[in-house]
Length: 270
Image (cartoon, rainbow, N blue to C red):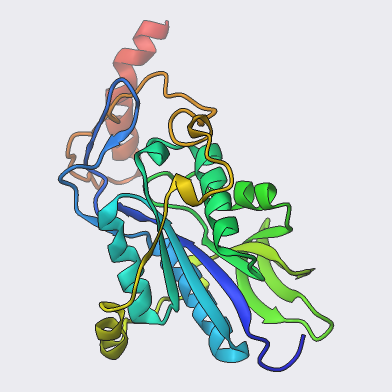
């Protein structure tokens, strides 16, 4: 692949809660997002940045996909402000409560409803789920090669792309044929600030909605909570540690201090 090849790039992004505070629905195990401030997942901004760099260097179009309620439009508006070309909101009550399996299946159906893409980019993970599995699952549904922890992307002269990725404390270079999916490292693709000109223009851009009616598979049992393979058995808040003061002691004094704390437990064991 040579010259400005007009790659068609898809970027999957998500809106997440701005803070870790929030309540869980005890029956479904779902996070209650009502009233929580929402932001764009920082890892997905890195994926968008990597797409923008590819576009600047090689040419192409960037299509951004996000799944969520109407307010998730903000993700696409922000992407427009950074330079994305098209935006798609995957919305519908059928998609609520999806786990990794159902989320990746929904994304696959949405991507296919739009067309074929040369490259699909994802962030490493989301801050509200932290599974880091959606990208790999999506690639599996699409039956295309994928690579995680990518730090550098370049077009290969013989076709496809060459990526540099992290693996067990070392960096490895690999060649991938197109189409393919990669998940990028946040630290290597620091997102740019939105352009005022592009933000103004982005407010007028049309956002395309993808509902279950636009998908090839319209069986509601395959999406959302119904299509999820996992179920939350039990939820509980993490134990919050009390505020403690740091104690600075010399060696022997520190040993006596620690022993005094542990002494009751030592006596119980004896």
